[in-house]
Length: 175
Image (cartoon, helix red, strand yellow):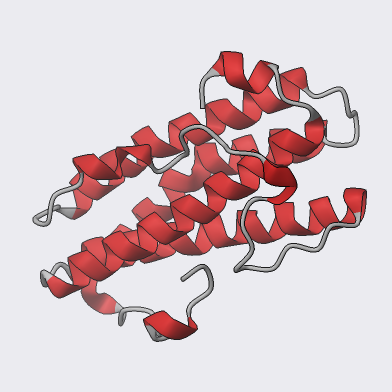
C-alpha cells in the first residue's frame, strides 16, 4: 500500500487494511507452499508454510485488537471490516513466483515482500493518532523485518524435517 494512501486512513481503517493484508499474505504463502510441494520442492514449500504461519499469527493479533478497541468480532472467514477496500497488499509480488523456485530464491522473494509489510507498519505507526496502537505497529514492523531470518532457519533445517501437517483445503482458515 502506498504511503499516500496510508496517510489518509484513520486508525480503524489502518487496522482493517493490515488485517486484510495479513490474511492475503497467509493465503498466498500457503498456496505457494502447496505449489512447491506439488513440484517436489519440499524445502521451498517449508519456507512458504512457515511464512504463512507467521502471517496467520499477525492476522490473529490484529483480529483481537479490533475486537478489543471497537467490539467488532471478525472471524477467519469474514471480509475486511467496516466496508473498506484496501489497495494492494503484502502479497502483490506473488505473480513473480515460478514453479521451479529454489530455497534461496524463495528467501529473496520473501525478503522483498516482507520489506513492503515492514514499511506499511512503520508508516502506520507514524500516522496513527492512537498512542495505544503505536507499539503494536512498531512491533509488527520489527516482526516483518525479522521474518526472513525465521524462514532462513527453516531453510537451514532443510529436508531433515517433515512438511508440516495441514488441514485439507476445505477445512483451512481463509479458504
